[in-house]
Length: 143
Image (cartoon, rainbow, N blue to C red; front, side):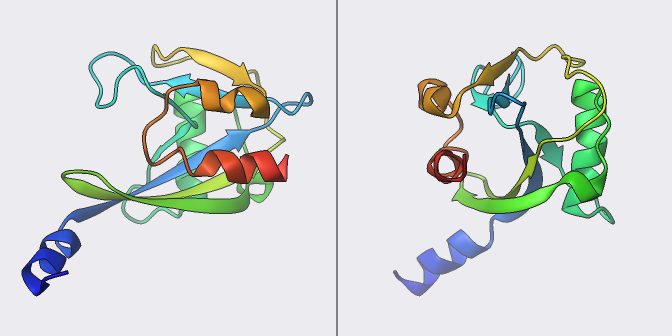
């Protein structure tokens, strides 16, 4: 790689997003569909969101899952599993993925997103953002 090309890859802004694989008693994983009007609308993803300045990834997940799904999670119930690192055209995404099997409340769409409980075998049938795709085989092995 030429030095100038290397610099163009390293000057992209990095966005830190925390995501959770919420796993129910039947070992199904909760997915949410990105709503119309948002980037990558119509693609399925693991719930979560951007980490705000001063927040840890776990704090961001606790906040985001309450805002998006109306569930309460303690940070101690989040077990780090893996992470995704992916270059998009205008930014670089760094996304830790946590496993969670315990929460209070029933996940419900609070921001207009469609929700689906997917078996590990069915995960590959949901169209997902490129950054999420490498997470599927890791979840498949773990479950």
